Amino acid sequence: MKRERLMTVLLAPHVTEKTSLAMQNNNQYTFRVRRDATKTEIRQAVELMFDVKVTGVQVVNEPGKTRRFGRQVGRTQDWKKAYVRLAPGQSIDYETGAKA
Image (cartoon, rainbow, N blue to C red; front, side, top):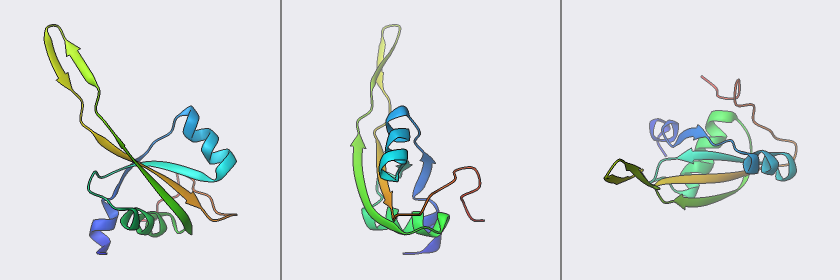
């Protein structure tokens, strides 16, 4: 994969109570990713940006929610979430983890 493409695959870390427990118990980190990203691209992007060894990737397509503003009904955008499992002994620090 091209380095420029891999740098755009990960959009943001997705931190919730559920993902925090997955981090502590399973060494599993969660990211919002591009909707057209594949598991292979996600694995390579995490390994490139955080310099860690990835052992598994699971992907979830999240549907957008219906929102109302007065009588107008709309939808938020669909998005993709990736659960990335790291090798034992590896970890990611979100504040200082990304390499320049």
